[in-house]
Length: 86
Picture 1: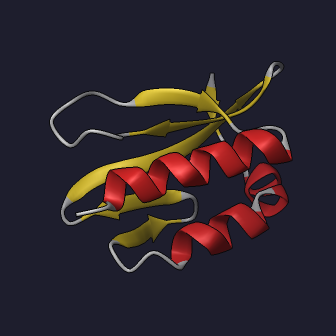
Picture 2: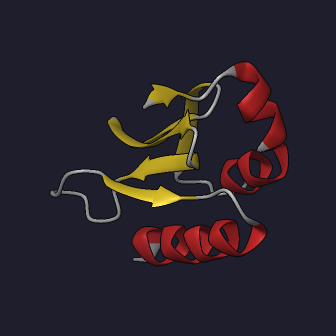
């Protein structure tokens, strides 16, 4: 599974804009977000769709989620909100 290409990231613009709205996240490079000094999420693509690797629990490894459909993206944003909640 390869990292998302610029074309795929362009397709994800609304999702990326939503992620950019979270004050706790810093986009270090296109589609790669950090929380404080630790990698929080980045995107991949393969023939099965678009995926995100996200660290939903700070001390645990990344969780891979599919974010190809609008429904999957909405569920992903809900999980990010929960992960960022105090």
